[in-house]
Length: 157
Image (cartoon, rainbow, N blue to C red):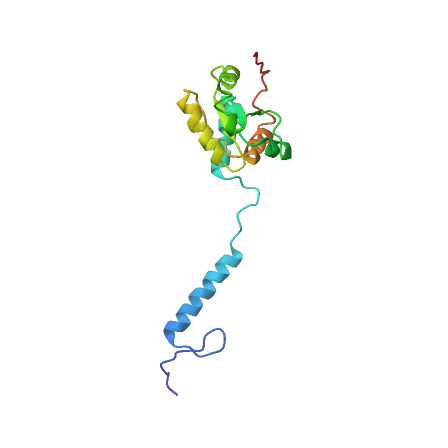
């Protein structure tokens, strides 16, 4: 009894040409590795979120909520100053008085409006950092145990 060109039977009991069998074994190995690999922890925080948390903790910024009033009502961030992105230019004086040289961390729902706010604030000469979204800011505040320190902001018209 001689060996034929198809090689020995594969794990599935069928006879396969050697190149197909090797591919099948390789695929099987990949599946086994994937099945036995430990998944990433569900509570692992993305690096960019951690960077925002550290920035908020170390810079004690004015947290600027540039979402609409409706969005703020749905998910308020109590320690933030709310100025809708569409009103930012008209509220420039008030915001600059409140900030008094402190950095400003705008945020919105997804980070797009807050990035626009960063560009506006930097044009005004402010130090600004995109804090991305209300979810990220709430995470950062909870992780910092309520920090940054809430300073009493006063505004005189």
